[in-house]
Length: 272
Length: 272
DNA sequence: GCAAAAGTGTTCTCAATACACCCATGA
DNA sequence: TCATGGGTGTATTGAGAACACTTTTGC
Image (cartoon, rainbow over all chains, first blue to last red; front, top):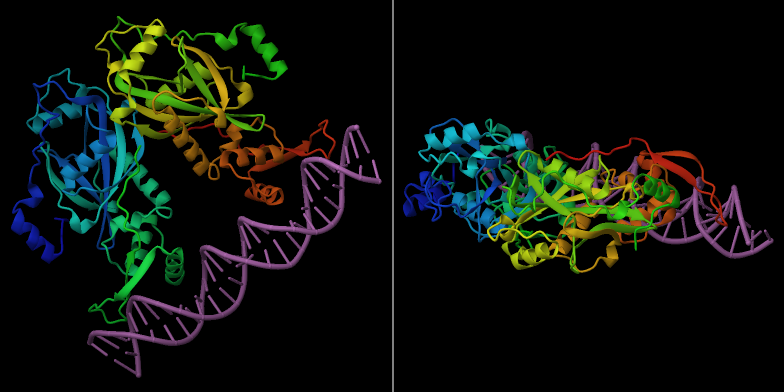
């Protein structure tokens, strides 16, 4: 299993919720109810590309459908009474257990060919959630893409009614995805790369305190290219957003690095 | 009336379609039909921010509702069988008479509060298009924003069934707009500014041939700040996308500038 | 002490800036 | 010929790239 938390935190989580990694969320409004009238906007969904950073790897949260070898981005539908940003935030909270996540809408996907009604029907039947044949879920769906940045150590992935796993994958080892979800993921990554410099993205992917090499590995992993250590250090310090704290005491056979933190903690999302 | 085309083109257009500037487009599928079942995706619309450049001004195409002093961005709905990019392209063609327009999706707007069902009802009644009370147009609507870049001289704005004018406004003199359309316009402008450098945006806002000062004014207008003439010239020439043609013969009491054109004519749009 | 990794310094290059100067044109 | 505006040249500045050097730590 790819999910591996630090031992200390693992114990803590196990203590308060013993089945934390395979615990279905009980949504008060069930979009897959076969009988009740939908309170969701028809033919529109939200798909989330949830990025985390751990062990020098950029990771994405991927969901697996129940009783099927089909993988997808975590997603959901928009209730009639909630803003789309709120919907994305709710979906994220359901999946990660974390509120106040950094969130960014990046694109909307609406090709006719991006849907596969037969596959939808099959997956819902396998998950034990058969719908009426005329349900809008069997029509084409437009999907609004959001990407989210989370502190890996704060997240405990959770399944929902139609998925039986929700786990982190290295960005380079994501399995074949449902319909156009790979395209959505790649567009999210491209947007992340584009915005890495101008926004406090790294502050939401790292723990509150970190070393300069850790920050550099984050940059190198996201941008996919190595950077010169000396220049990276100077550039980061010159930008003035970092604050040096103290020495870090590691077990490594080398000089201990300084710890840094971001001066202004930002965990906001743009309103659209 | 702000609409002013070059005399030569005006004559040509008048010749082939005498009422070109107040000519309703006959859409084969009427989203406002009070009786027929909708073939459109419910609760989703497309709004277009159509940019043009003329007389050293950045201009936007604004629609006015029939029999009401309400102004809005040109928009429309998505047919069940068309991609969202195609829908935007169709809406643009209906408004401008131009196909093959440079098109870019930039954001999707879906706050609950962005709708005003009462105003919608009032406007449709005034336009002579009353709908059934339970029509989805009176529910909240999510709008996908596209911006388009057009050669001002090639466009003849056209009204539709619920508007009685469609005219160019200077970006600084746009009247108060319907619901959140000003926000949409500003987001479009911000995206345009962000992408001005990295894309061949200017090639779609200028005629095929242009002078360096014209290009500079375009940049200064979009970015909203003056630039040094000498440096601008060198930077543009150094980028290698321009091709010098010949001298331009003007009536001005000064040296005649060179004419330039872009090496690769690009009129594509990103597929989403 | 030595290897490894962190931190700092130095040089070079190139692009952007700011300004000066030259050229063509029509009144 | 002079004002106007287009085109080109040049010195200065600053950021980034590449590389060398110093410092700290555990073995």
